[in-house]
Length: 372
Image (cartoon, rainbow, N blue to C red):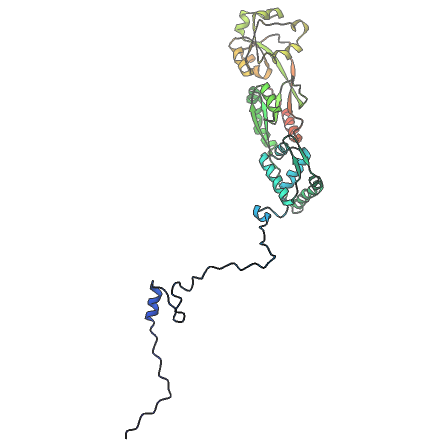
């Protein structure tokens, strides 16, 4: 009887796994099926279901977003904000503070808004006509001053000086003075005061006066007849005047005594006779009754000069304007002994807080008088 083979205790080797199907599954677009989780047939393992919000315990509310984070405000006031606050507290005018800080009024308003948001308290009570400090603003003043002073002390302690702030002024001046007096001085002023930029606004005397009062310009060079309690007037070096006419005109109509003027035309800027009046004030009594037969209003000294050179009338002009014409013989002096000297004025508004800048500019004008 044949012997039956005895069963072996060794476990037969497991077949080598076939990797080809796995590779094909990795590149196949068919739905993925897990061998252990046959129900997961719709999405790959990386696609997880959307998270659901957990229920909030009773009595607890969602935190509100921080207003500081929403507006991205600094944790403490900035130096610019404090300096702006102190300037407004001194002038009680947002517009004046903007001019003093040489920034736009909108910048001043924004700095105050940010400072009030940082501190969480109103600093000013504003109406259409007035600005007043609140109790919180009044209490802030000494602390703001100490903070700004401490910042300057830190800069000095570190051995670094802050650059001098640049300032800008718009100076109103008549066309003749702008072209022959002020414009040639601008480059010299830039060397002497690199921190000060001077812009020119050219107009006639009356327009400059009105623009200065309306705060459209910062300062102006005005004539000797300036009388306005709203303005600060600083006398400048006196300017001499000469009565002149073309030789051709004087050849036809001699002008030796006051009565001779009745047959001549006077050239002046306006009905107020701003050129003739200073001459009359300085003339001897025998010439103060001079009366011209006709007055032609030309608005500017340049126009008067041009018409006088063409023989269109008698003019009273600043000596620097007519010096070269007298030397060349294009004009001839009338009553040469009368040479009145009138003081021009550097004028600025009394409520403008930039008094040091005005004083500096008026000093520059006094150092460089109009001499021709």
